Image 1 (cartoon, rainbow, N blue to C red):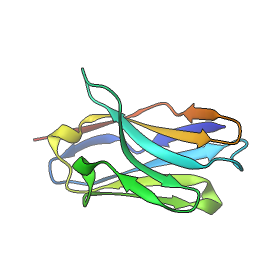
Image 2 (spheres, helix red, strand yellow):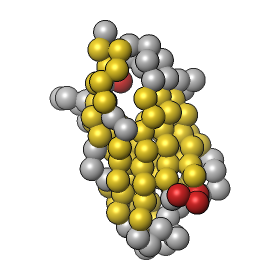
Image 3 (spheres, helix red, strand yellow):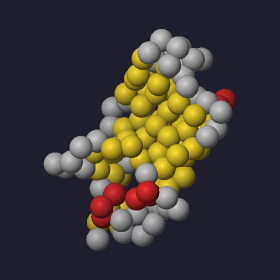
Image 4 (cartoon, rainbow, N blue to C red):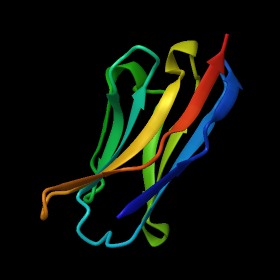
Length: 116
């Protein structure tokens, strides 16, 4: 499985961005895809995730501002980020979990910079 994350960039506080995570390869047994982020000097943290069944979960810090969704036909998961804050600045990564084979896959990160 290969994951390609895109959509990062520079935005002013209060603005919006949409990240995309396109999955390719043997994606049939992927159970869930999540977005993580890592700010300078901080640990990587889970931002949002969506399961195969469509169940979503969010970090408290982004609830009400970020929305994770998917387009099954495109094997793509999106992260719509609204009302962005400077503290959202980080490299964002997508991760796919294949529980059947006990595997996880990471995409290369995409940088989101929110200016104040």
